[in-house]
Image (cartoon, rainbow, N blue to C red; front, side, top):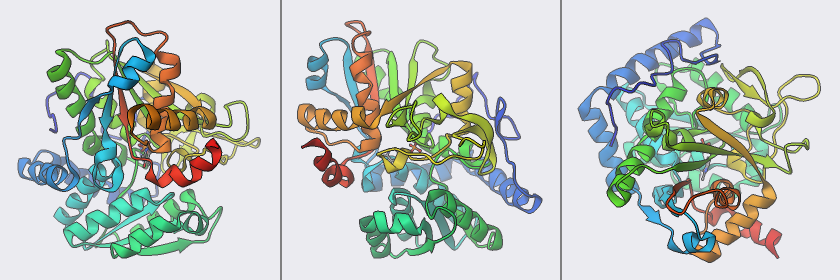
Length: 401
Ligand SMILES: *Cc1c(COP(=O)(O)O)cnc(C)c1O
């Protein structure tokens, strides 16, 4: 399911740039570590036995291929166009994150690492990393902000149950950004025996390229499944954008197919006109954050601002460099969706289709309210349902009464 055919679109360049975005803005000693990682990744990705190892686990351990489900009720509800859901929520651990983590953890083993480390905000990537580490007999240390440890107690317990060690990070805002810094710091001090598993299509080169590769299984499957069911490609592919990994995974197979509209839904929080937002593409400025150039939300003084979204997975002040590039070139469109719209979509999909989506994924579902009045009878709309909503249900029910 990893398509290796040559594409017209061939970014990033050798330095990791997507146009003016991306790259690796890091100190010299860090550059060496990243160069080795890039070399090893390129070798692994051209090694059929490695790819077979990755896909065998995705298949039998995680449950791939995930279904492309024709949402009949939702289709009837809107009355125009056919709506399909790509069921990433059915993966082991409940979201798309495992695709990337299994790939990177197998690469870690191949490179001789004994331990993987990961940063986590809401804890979803931490749980996926702890899971893959246990499966492959690796140690796992997870770095998590002190504030997030308190907010996401259940995921902390899950990580511990899976045998991971959770490091509480008490610097800065005590959240995801500080956890990233702590993980990088640890990695640089132990880069011989430790592999850093990054959770989204962010970070310095080669991470955005590597995460895209492991997540591109999503779009490759969508393409194959849509051709099988409909005999043609979809007209729209929708995905929510945090760092951008599930979206680039869903989009990548279609970048050269210009008739396929690619739409990313970013978290507007309480609205793009308010201070409480995470819509970095709608509102951000170009700057360097965590080793790469991208759009970043800024405060009044031009420093990295604080983001806000009801959904922990989309609550990040930047967005992966490739999405910045696709945004500026117009190949993909990015639209902000508010907390309120996402909460309504969370309830709507649950009631209409019997599927409780993650609040992150509900941002993509919410866009149907606008899109489906513009579609034609025969249009095919695919939503990447990045995860399941059990984790959100208790909290959101309080908002819905
Ligand atoms: C983490 C997460 C996201 C956001 O991350 P991306 O890298 O943008 O995909 C979206 N949906 C779910 C269910 C998540 O757990």
